[in-house]
Length: 127
Image (cartoon, rainbow, N blue to C red; front, side, top):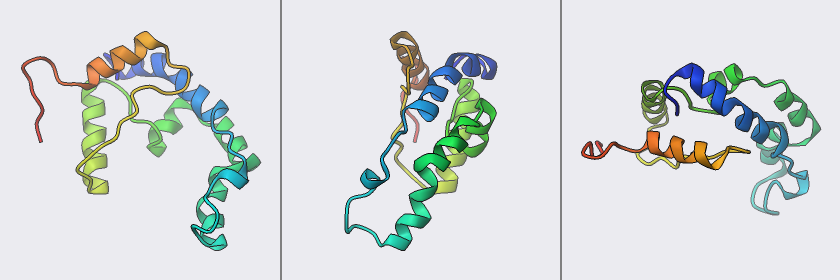
């Protein structure tokens, strides 16, 4: 989260790129626990996410694509709030596990992101 959508792109695009383009190297043999799912299910669900082809696709991703595909929720506080509400309603979830640090995000930026995500003193949390 940042003060504006443009600031979010400037601040977060480099660590998000770092994560998606450099940190997702998973050998196909380690992508699933053996015997947990059928081969057909594995091929349908995991294959598109790992391996050489998936790596090449990730290299073409841009900030706009991360946002468009829902891989990242980022922007100003109002933009993030709107995207979270849409996601919560669309997925029908009541609990979120958020990732406020990604890739090579610097410590100070992680702290700022966390600060912006949480409620201000006296605001409390609304359900």
